[in-house]
Image (cartoon, rainbow, N blue to C red):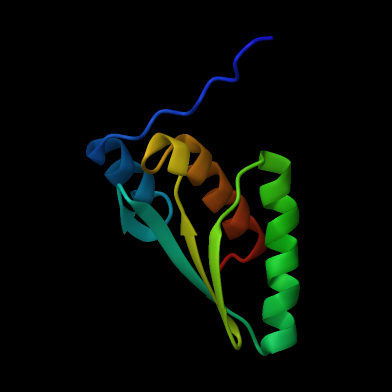
Length: 100
């Protein structure tokens, strides 16, 4: 059985460069964050389901806090101890669903 390669944690410089291309996200080496605001609670729940399908495709899942019509998202690769390229890819895909 072949081991699946684990993504490496990004350096501070790599993360800063990556966040410049993700203007809806902020954060640090411990995680990147974005809030998505929707018209109402059912819309927020539906948005969470859309994100869940994308996350499942990547086998990488965000930390989500649902508050009425807002989704507070945090992306971090816990097994790497910080932000990796996998988090950036999920952020890009979420931005594709909710461009701002």
